[in-house]
Amino acid sequence: MTVNALPKSDSKVLPLLGRSLSELTEWVESQGQPRYRGKQLYEWLYTRGARDLGDITVFPKAWREEFAANPTIEIGRSQIHLHKQSRDGTEKLLLKLADGEIVETVGIPTSKRLTVCVSTQVGCPMACDFCATGKGGFRRNLAKHEIIDQVLTVQEVMQQRVSHIVFMGMGEPLLNYENLVGAIQVINKDIGIGQRNITVSTVGIPNQIPRFAQEHLQVTLAVSLHAPNQQVRAQVIPSADRYPMAALMDDCRQYVEITGRRISFEYTLLAGINDSAEQAEELAHLIRGFQSHVNLIPYNPVSDSDYQRPSESEIQTFVKVLEDYNIAVSVRRTRGIEAEAACGQLRGQHEKAVTR
Image (cartoon, rainbow, N blue to C red; front, side, top):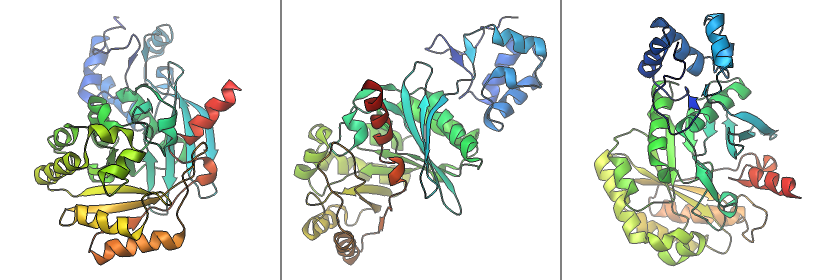
């Protein structure tokens, strides 16, 4: 048998996770196995969540022994490095990848759904001033199988089927474009999560929003705006200097025109920075007449940051101003503060502990 005959990959280790039924079937046939073993492998990967090829007991013992002796073939699952649970049921995981890098993912349960907050990069190059991930720097993009693994791992840990996905973890998704789109397709077609239950969050990368629109996916696009004007946005998002507000809004309008889907604007409320009633009015004028929704996010405190969370009265004043302008708005309530659920916070604390 030619155990190394796998579809092409950039890595010396060839992960099976992330491959379609047809790709897996082609591979098992290249191993001299009957075609039906492709369906078996597919089900063990995406339904049973197999972590090791040796665990797939429907495969012949001799074939499994070949896998055990060949380190260049693996399913491509991560190891759980650290697991913390909040009182509200939020599960925060640090996952150790094959090269030793650490990435975060979060399972957020409610009475009717289980949402996974997925990372697309190890660290983030955008360096948003209020974000723990941005303060930690950038290491690399995640491979497609490393993105998909997060969903399967949360599903396994929480013993509940995942219903919703938000690409709001570590990293800027549109800077890992091909792996993002590939992962969405697998999550939709192979894991079985509807595209309308998937949200992709982006700070905004020049030319990438219209490109993403051309994929004609039914996902929700969430744009991290965080400011009502260019001056304030550049203060909290350094990359805003390379992507002026006017250009960003033009690209957002193109997205709506191409897809027919509204955009969700994410707006982290930072006390004394972007949370005044005047700034709420300015935001309303910026997006008025736009097919959109504003998701207000009261700041989740991060160590090594001078930013503060607004009071409840300030949050409600901001909401009322937007509502007075007939802007669709909601407030995202913080989950898992004691589990360091702010993006990148648990990983950052872990790295500090390791280097002490």
